[in-house]
Amino acid sequence: MNKYTGVIFDLDGVICFTDKYHYQAWKSVADRLHIPFDETVNNRLRGVSRMDSLEIILERYDGRLSGQEKEALAEEKNELYKKLLCNMSPADLSSEVKDTLDALRASGLKLAIGSSSKNTKFILKRLGLGEYFDAISDGTNITRSKPDPQVFLMAADFLGMAPENCLVVEDAEAGIAAACAGGFDSAGLGEAAACGRATYAMRTFADLKAICHA
Ligand code: BG6
Ligand code: MG
Picture (cartoon, rainbow, N blue to C red):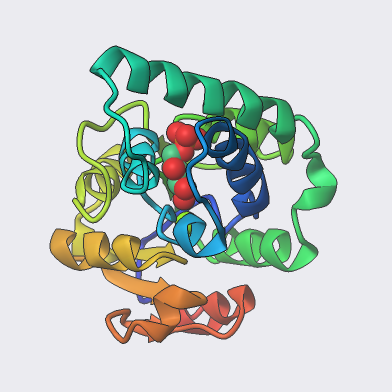
């Protein structure tokens, strides 16, 4: 029997890998403003909303910017990012991820997305997963970003399930913190597996089949 009734997946870094596109788009904005920006700063942006990401990048900026100027920079980054996302296709969905999702679903689990990204639906469509998930909670329906649990609580609500019956799958420490705060069990990949706070530390995505008894 399944241990859970639903699984809520973070998108970026779990279902697909958009890190390099976020990096290129932010790098172009940062370079224009002569702000030092490297992979170490980029790693801090994982799971963090667009505006909060900008604030992290601006920690190294000497000047002052108005709210309107910040909005314009975030918009500039997003336009570049969306152009880069057009490089994505169903070939960017690994067979390990697709086969695991199919196995979880076949075992009777409902599957949802819980992502801070406002580009979630666009990315899912690029991957050929436009209609795949039973529920989507993303940057367009939340007011508070991870580590706040809002995005996962809303995903569970969209599935009609209680947090204790859902497993959250994350690659970011902020996402594991959000799962804990919301009362969810969590399965971590990469940095989220190493942080010591996830219920399960995964080596690879397919580990979910054993975790969920699927
Ligand atoms: C998260 C990413 O999934 O979405 C963050 O890990 C990103 O790096 C955030 O800042 C918001 O994304 P978007 O697409 O709304 O700019
Ligand atoms: Mg992520």
